[in-house]
Length: 542
Image (tube, rainbow, N blue to C red):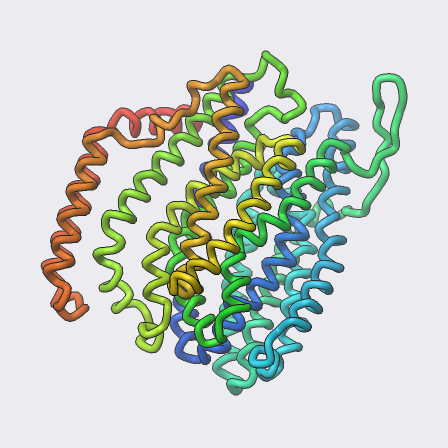
């Protein structure tokens, strides 16, 4: 039974993952095209304000209001077959799912007020700045209104609802922003972005209302629950509520660690430099948003529904097949990310100068954007590792585990701030130093989550389901990557004084193409068994 459950969940999450990847590909391409126009339509000051400061305000409101509750409710028990029990479970979950809306009101108001009070004179003196901030706060609240419906559809494995909602919202946001920019004067540039985000929030809300139109009763109601020798009248399921509180409290620290570089850039760098940082971040995080974010989100759903809840961690009759399935999925993802890391560090540095010269707008080549993109070669794989490991942690951790992790995250926060200041100012690395500090921060967080994963499986008698040997390629593969790295770096040195164009650099590109093909062929030859096992498991899951 547990094996069938894991297989069906794997099928559903694979479908969700592919849909989210396509959604992110679509939305990122649309956003990428828009940004190419925006960096030419607006000044670096406007682009820095909207892409760094306004986005930080938006993510602060959304993350603090909903992230902890969203992750906790993924562990909601499946609906019982008994109609009465099903209604009870659904009502208790619905009551908790209303909390992000209630939290969003004070969070949006306080965040907007704090931002307005602490903004620099150069930022706040821009036309219609305060109006734009109000619109961003409203946009966040409108998006939070859809959260109870989002949680319901996720727990019902109706992932296509989110795909359609976000896809529609991205299109309307893009069209709105662009139309206002081209039809109004430059003084309305900030408002253009704010209106686009407001349209996004409203579209998300109405899309979920349409999807849940058959049952829009989200009023909080007390539920009478029968215990062993008495009955209780409850608003919230105690275990899930306790977990939601713990995860919400932890989200404050996690948000600072996730957005710490933007926070420091917004406080330490001039607006023009913030625009350069935003451009580099948009280019650098393209793959992370298209591929790794959907993988992390679908992995969190899969692990939350597959792994036994912490309250049953001492039960020796746990479904070992489900544990081994979860371990196989986790190991496969980490092995894939190891190959990504090898590809990034082997071919990224030798070819990044050519890529930046071809892609970056000319006026940004003299900013910190190229140096930031060099660091993203290491930042993106570390984001992938940390994302999936913390997805597992969030799916399996007890409130006690969360408290222990919070202490570790506080230490990481202190280390991040110290490292960022030391690298940016002391080592004179500038904005690139902030990204290097983030790489170290992600490595520390991933190490902690990885230690939890090993302990989790070992304590449940499934220690063989995961292991570092499963996530590291064989020696011949590593050898070929090292050889390829030496070849492309030698080629880069030979073409150092050649103009950065496709025609002039065609010999250097040819070396890279041949080296990449050699690495991929070697991976296929020496890791064929691993690939076949993965294909077999996916076929059986379907």
